[in-house]
Length: 180
Image (cartoon, rainbow, N blue to C red):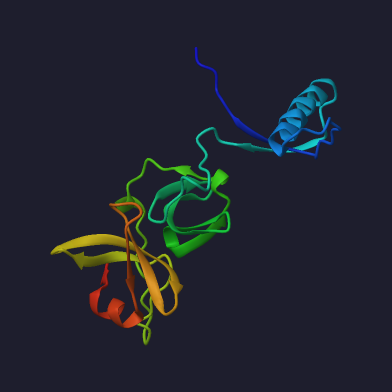
């Protein structure tokens, strides 16, 4: 019978130790590590903790275009910055989470793609999280619109993680194909 696992992150208070000065800095640090381990064995420091799913993501693993799942459901990552992950969910709901609250979803991008909300008089308006297609090399490529930088949107390929395209609003108006 396998045991159910849980990820626990301990945030320790600083540990202060006094050690003999080394001839080089590396020796000093090595002595400090040894002293800190001895200190922890006899007097564990105060700490705060966080509990996460064992399959939780970390900031290094998350990429725009990835299908992820959290407490609010499955969605598509639109951007990753400053340790936070923006995700678009069904109903055009946007969330911003730390990656540890997310895990890779078993759902396909087709199940979670969010259609662009087209409002009268705003047919050429595009937002982060809008999903659709662009034509590249003669085929429809599924994309999600990411952040806008310097007048251009990043469009993230949903079939090839890490691959992106850059388009202005004018280019999107000509080339973006809405999903139904």
